[in-house]
Length: 121
Image 1 (cartoon, rainbow, N blue to C red):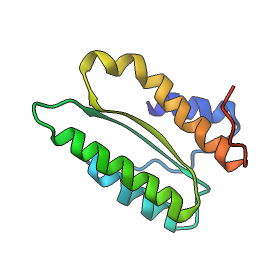
Image 2: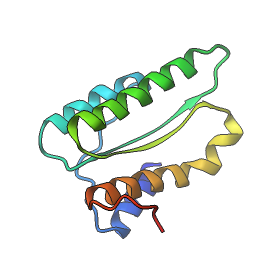
Image 3: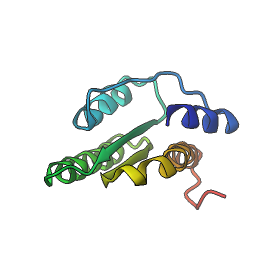
Image 4: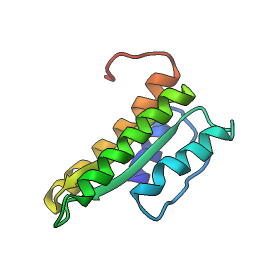
């Protein structure tokens, strides 16, 4: 996903200045908050996969993570591109969505950073 996001950013003349890896989806909002609070970034992109498990744990975590990302975006006023596949992704869902989700997350940040809120072409 990262390679697709970097390629899309390059095509839009956007710089990805830092990549932060987290141990799991639950740590994503905190990593995003720390980045955006630093004042060094105009936006952020969250990439990842939340697979379907045997219980509803992944669904609950996924919903909490996405809600936290939305709240962080509203609190900071900075765009966060959501390139997270799932929650509830099954193995056959993942591969076909990797590139599309990564690229769409970059386009969303570029669109919202420029003040354009219409659909990407």
